[in-house]
Image (tube, rainbow, N blue to C red; front, top):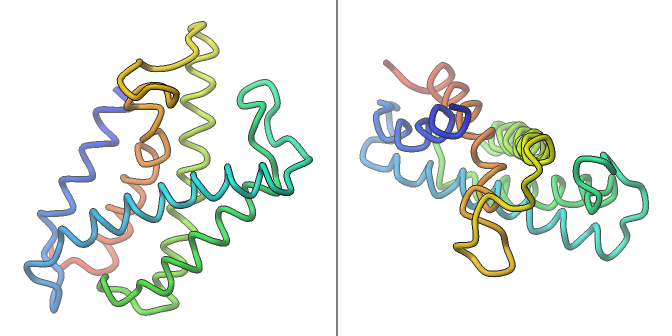
Length: 158
């Protein structure tokens, strides 16, 4: 239920009618996925480089506060620099990126908790060494509804 409902917000971005942004809604999907995935990757990188303090050792032992902060800041800076591909101003893009990356982090934790509860290590074996498809997109699953609704109520005319 969580995966299907939340992921359905990604293609729903195509249905938004944003004045002055007609015909470019696919850019919102690219922006969402790129920023959230960049945050995930950079959380891993920063965590490996300088990570010491565990965020939630029982749920996700490799996640650190240093990685979390570094990944969120890096993705937010990049997302702010890419404001031009969205209907947002530079400041709005920064706020949107901050919301997306925080929700992405929580998505990873929640789905890790579900996996631990069910005694499952990975959601699948489609991508060797990276778990399943849902393991790669767990952060997008939680970020998508927030991104969709903020964009809908803040910029859409529908």
